[in-house]
Image 1 (cartoon, rainbow, N blue to C red):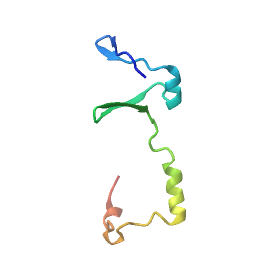
Image 2: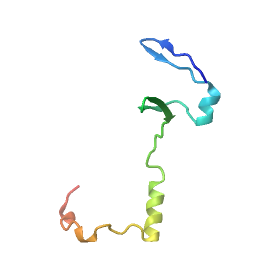
Image 3: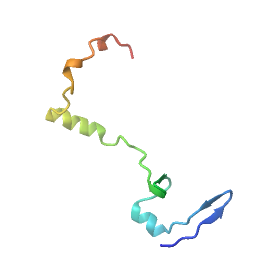
Image 4: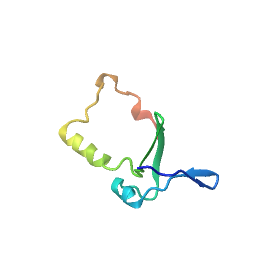
Length: 82
């Protein structure tokens, strides 16, 4: 789809048709990046840790939360004050 780049104050912008925004789930804010000469606009995920607690519980139940390097345990951890 060809679009016009329009002057908007001191910047420039592109009007994105509402059906296209709905198709990709963009509302309100978005993540805008430039990669390899291409402008990317993606939905902004405001809660990046969503689901982490459930995944941690599942891993613990399945035994998948064991220490990766048990021989490198932090013996002084009990002395740390947080």
